[in-house]
Image (tube, rainbow, N blue to C red; front, top):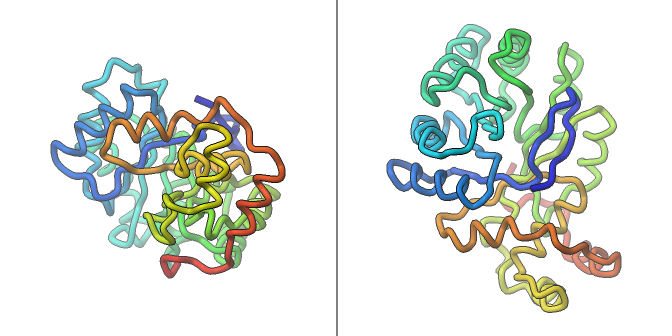
Length: 265
């Protein structure tokens, strides 16, 4: 696994495992399988209602907790300072963990500054190793910065070959924030797995279109959290660190990109 440095000196895996839509024993099995095949970043959220299952899977593995990077997120039910403080404790209790490696505000809310203050306090108390945001656009991000004591380590947003947002990633980096991609496969939209550009490039490296799609983001210093319940695809999504895309192929992939969200964010 390769890592990127966060603004507080901690490291985040370039490829993580997303758990959205996974519940019950399927979630426990999938997360345990993901850790077993080499994932070290597991992404959950209060909104997903699967934090307890993620925590159970972590406890089932032989991998030491300090080698894992666990992310979770606060959402609209925690939209005040006091509610956010309680929600942070709720997540820790659900996960049965003393700390999480990253906690985000799941999306912009009118009370985001209050919620972020609660995250900062938990960060200084050692309950959260890094804090950040999710789905904030440039305006919302810069507005939050005016009230921050701790610059967000991560902004997790929609990013994929059809909407990579590389200029936004550079802007975030200039302020010390890493961009992370949810839906790096665009949830299958745009027939991404049959895209001829990705197929053609993949044949040159003996890689699948999915691997090329991930590699494009990773080589632009964007951490990715693909989701799959298939253990072979879990392995495939991790198997992207034994090659580098040549510049002409990066340009070819860039030509696919558009300027509009596929999900309405």
